Length: 611
Image 1 (tube, rainbow, N blue to C red):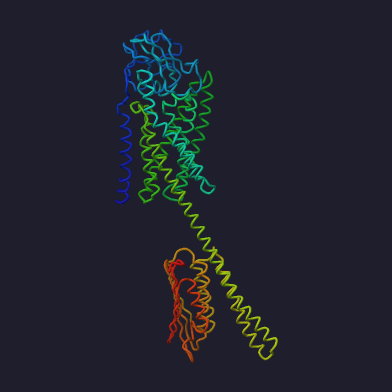
Image 2 (cartoon, helix red, strand yellow; image 1 turned 60 degrees about the vertical axis):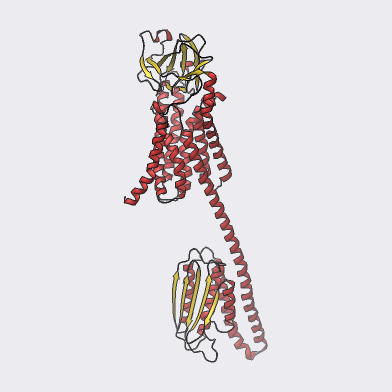
């Protein structure tokens, strides 16, 4: 890797590293709840078997100390968490948990105050969801121990985040204030994905809008799942949990489908194979989750089902992180190469990746990062960036369609001119042939001369038809083929008269020659050669053709005697007026210089009409 490439890598990699570091640092910022809310960080825990009840759980004294947020370690089927409530309680007091990781029961003293799910509690089988939990505290419970009895089959076990104590109204108000932006972002992401699908989907370019729709919907579901506000509005915890399970692989599949269409043609961005890998892993993930559900719902294999669920979920997280790093690598390469779309995507994706890494670390047990998720900020940035890219592609396709329509209209006009020209040219020649035939039938003395003229006119008619057919073949017409036809025709015609033919060509024009130009160029070339060969004692005909992006220039020279009239040679006779008319129809000009060497020059501005 040379110095320039190293510099490009450093320039685009450093902002990503800084963004990730900033996102992780945000996880350490102290929360700012308002009102009479306080934190319950000092807890103790112990592990036991399923049969242990609240009366005997702490019979051996206190357990191990733990500061929340944190996750206990050890072996056992039941986790007990205990803390002491304040002596003086606030009105309508509750203790709020971001989520309890498994079925549980809550006790104040020896009195059970909450069961989740109700009524099964720890006997529940299968997924139960992860709602925001508010444990009610009675007016006379001041100074009493608050105990949670939690199923310890799930890892990490315990609770998420830091438990909060305070009035129910203050906690709900704070949840609304904190989660309303997340809920709005999630809904906006889903709405943008749907709008992108409806407004931009087409049979030819379906991958881009479909990928955007899958990504927007999945990222919206992911963001909403981590809000407490959804649990205040409705009891959707289990549905949210299932939607979150589906959203995990869908996010990467949707994003890669989008990127594969956006950058698929670039050798620097091999997103197709990465998409196939994620599709395969997603299929295996859903099969594993189905197996986990069946096992976890049974009476004897719950632990195995939980294990399969944990393995599948953590595997898909690893695949997502790995895919994100590969995407980041490819996008940085494209950005360093100057791709504008890659630069737009890098802004949104870099922010999303920064906050997602923080969430993934929290999911793997980095409890200090699990206080609250800011992934909605990155999700919004990425959705907006992808929406901008989708709109850019949509506009580009419309512009391409407009240009194609204009080209089709221009070709249609050219065909009309060609047909009119063909009618005039072939019509005149055919009329002359008929007149000569009539004359030959009436006058035997002039029949031989008429037949000779008819043969010459017939040859011209065939040349006209051949030129017309060649110019109608849009797919095969190219500058190279046009030059090859001119060279072949010129050499065969001139050398048959015992003269030398030279043709010098310089091509730098792009695309295909316009149909009208192709036909007129062949006719001017043919007429010029015919007139050159009429000049007596000539030894050569030299042609120079230069086609640039802005101009076509054709030069023809010949020598020979000019007895009687100075106009003999290229451009002689009444054909000169026709040649100038054709040049004028193309928007160009034709000049003729007659001396010892006759020189004809045609100049036409390109594209046609630019002059």
